[in-house]
Image (cartoon, rainbow, N blue to C red; front, side, top):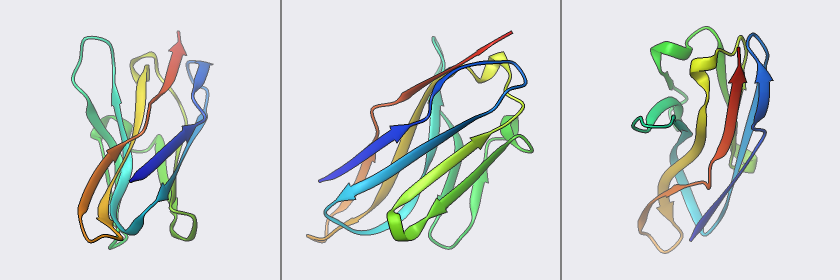
Amino acid sequence: QVQLVESGGGLVQAGGSLRLSCAASGSIFSINAMGWYRQAPGKQRELVAVGTNDGSTNYADSVKGRFTFSRDNAKNSVFLQMNSLKPEDTAVYYCNAEGVLTAGYKYLYWGQGTQVTVSS
């Protein structure tokens, strides 16, 4: 099993900043990809930023230049620095991780989600 613990959401005014954190723990052998998705009310969940173990990061076009993804491989953690926030960034942000368990099985887990609300 893998547990993902997120933190850092909250309420901020437009133009402000927030930093999200997510730490993975459990029977992890490897993490192949880890990152952030978000889901706004009435909309589908969408990719925000995901990093893979080759060092690359994939960002949604809507956040490029404003959000910065980073990771601490030693701590199985990822972070999302969100600057110049807009009301349309309001959503529940979910951490996601996929990889291989120590038992040899592939896994894909989601965190519980953290609310980000940007007021205009």
